[in-house]
Length: 97
Image 1 (spheres, helix red, strand yellow):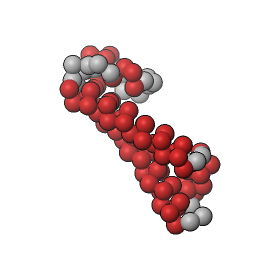
Image 2 (cartoon, rainbow, N blue to C red):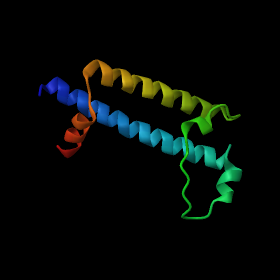
Image 3 (cartoon, rainbow, N blue to C red):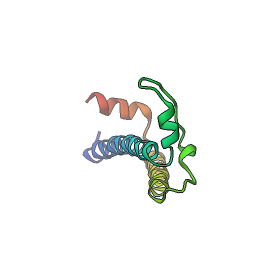
Image 4 (cartoon, helix red, strand yellow):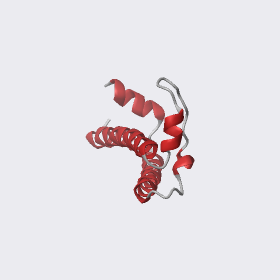
């Protein structure tokens, strides 16, 4: 594997972590603002699977901008994966190394 490809995969792996952190922080923002009532309905230890669609079109300008950024990041990552033929096993191999 070339040094360029190694760096490309490392960059893509970093973008995955950024995407995960972005959704976590967006959720935290929503649960203390726009979705505060929902947050109060949960008990400690409760689980709920959120979908990015649930955060769209809120009255919170900051949350809306974060969701727009998340979608732009998704588009960038999809484009990079397609252009560079990045596959799941490439990322798994990079995680192990």
